[in-house]
Image 1 (tube, helix red, strand yellow):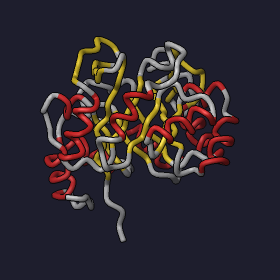
Image 2 (cartoon, rainbow, N blue to C red):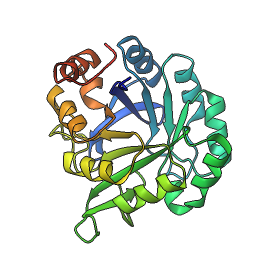
Image 3 (tube, rainbow, N blue to C red):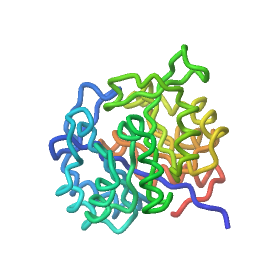
Length: 254
């Protein structure tokens, strides 16, 4: 049976509110995370991603109370990330109701934590959140960023994806920091490069502006497509994206 392409809204949360900007700057309020989670569950989202985008830069854990409220509201898989550094962080988020946990800065600082987390909970629980941008000095031309895209990690994005998957990450969430919030389309070249390098499910993120963009991301190799502002501000609905994917011949849950 062919696996359906997943359409995933993303809640970028800071100070208990969903926000969205361009390249993680000029953030503006997009609503209450619990209300949005409920609405997306009713609208046919296949999964929901909750990212506390200021947790790492502020040196704190994810806002667990909000995660618990969101988890109690939706009946679709929930991935949570932001400030995850230890096995204990993952355990706490799973107890709050998360189905999967994404890790970025914490894994770059200590790659061994990937082995520890997946050794305890299994690789299906851990998602590598890969915030990447074009960086000419890197072997692949793509570099890794951390702290909400504010710092270069000095790592090649493709090499890091391969290492993280080899250590146990069961999925890769690839966010193009160059395209994030621009609505100019997904970075399909980057998506294709990561797709060629790893064999786990790949989520494309960053740059969605119209329904056709999601189709192009899947053609580039994405197993799932994630977006924020186009859904938060009513530019597109989950149904419109799924209909466009269906017309292009890709399996979706309508």
